[in-house]
Length: 212
Image (tube, rainbow, N blue to C red; front, side, top):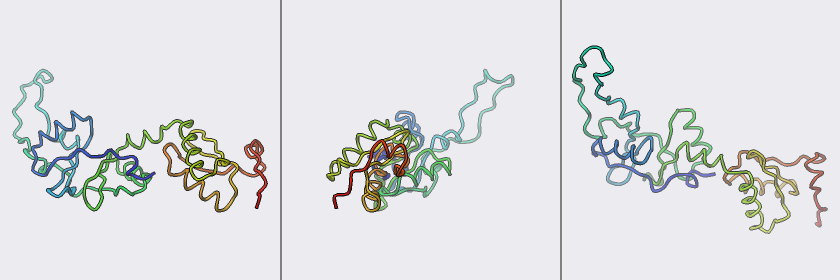
């Protein structure tokens, strides 16, 4: 799967120089964890996360303290530029979604801005990836069968269990490579393998003799 097939687009963004309170309102209203900050040309120049906002602090509630609460001397930042992460990591819309997932997992990020020719075109998040992984096996199997039929290979069959696709009735070599290339691009597919010759799986679906 490519990032462009999973991302949320168009992406919500704010212009550099926007009030920090605008970011607070967007994060809360849209239930997102980060908002990209763009310049006048739509280029991503920063990102403001919910963690950035929380670092600004909240006034302490005197009911939670035995002693009087002193007024904070730390000012609330006025614009997003003062708290945003500058030049954040982005991914292209043609990036493999597996690479985006790896980046988010390794770095602990919850989302990534997606760009095309340097301009913001979407956002991909952990939840986008999780939705893809949660595609039901039956739906995945039906979609693969449809794609095979589109190229005139209704005779190719598959079984999908827990996102693992087993190819059957597919000749080794070029046909297997083509079947893999199609299956690996579809939602819900975690791995593709061939039924081993002589296995119970292969015996259940014997391959027709090659007419050629």
